[in-house]
Amino acid sequence: MHPATAEANQRIARIAAHLNPYNFQMEECGLNLANCRAKGGAAGFKVAVLGAAGGIGQPLAMLMKMNPLVSVLHLYDVVNTPGVTADISHMDTGAVVRGFLGQQQLEDALTGMDLVIIPAGVPRKPGMTRDDLFNINAGIVKTLCEGIAKCCPQAIVNIISNPVNSTVPIAAEVFKKAGTFDPKRVLGVTMLDVVRANTFVAEVLGLDPREVDVPVVGGHAGVTILPILSQVKPPCSFTQKEIDYLTDRIQNGGTEVVEAKAGSGSATLSMAYAAVKFADACLRGLRGDANVVQCAYVASAVTELPFFATKVRLGRAGVEEIYALGPLNGYERAGLEKAKKELAASIQKGVSFIKK
Image 1: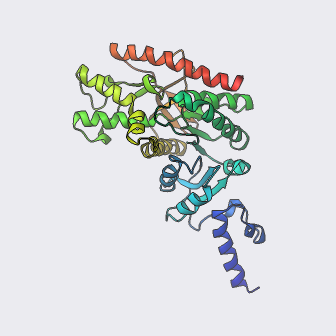
Image 2: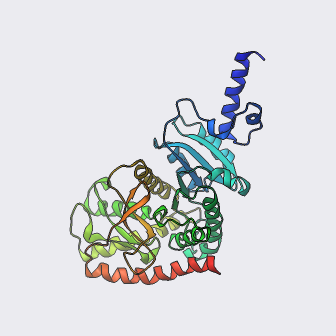
């Protein structure tokens, strides 16, 4: 074969290999996954999205493809991944995209990853409680975390699958069983509560949401979502009526979207935005940036509960510092007691699911 023809064939095989890591041409041209890199591809982190073909997964995958800190993006799902991968791979950004379909390709999807984002699971439908989601999503998270424990135990894991209050404890128990549990690396994504709080508070104050910072603590469902409105930056004061309105709206933001979509889904787009905002913070932490602080639901000693969402500082090891709650007013202290009661039950439910 003419050398130029051989080189052209190799280039074509390399392109095919991005889209389908199991492409037969890879063996023919001696390529392996490691060197299937776009020419001039960015240096950065390897990120896997598990559940990439779903309502959250697709916009999340698209936004991660746009993130300059990502060099390799693995998209995994049990259905439709080849189509989503082909579509997203046409975007002219630095990250190389590879698709993985079905349980038999999960381990390949996870090997060598720095960050794993898990939006997999079924969404909430009208009239469905977060408890209704539990059995389906609990099983999915368990299976995926078993894969992570085996293939990339050092990865930072961002858990989005609801109910987060229970799925994070499930992940922790799976990793404990496997002997790979690092509490600094398992994070429940509560960022959507913060994003909503910033938006709704900015509306009330007449400010740009990007200038507002509202700490949201507790968990990620109903009364466990506790916005600390006394600690809003920039400092401001609210009437009791405003506090009631804002707290209620932040706690029920998910239901607001479920009802508005009238049976066609839940918060997918704002969730994907929040997930990417949080993933970006994790990647900046991994890179070694200073003062990367966000709220997340993590293994924590801030309260007597084993898991709790507060502000955390992210770094090369994942969660490098967990911040205390700070001064709370009477309304917030009452809210905290309510939140803790419900959280305790959700955590126990997750632990029992693995231990039964």
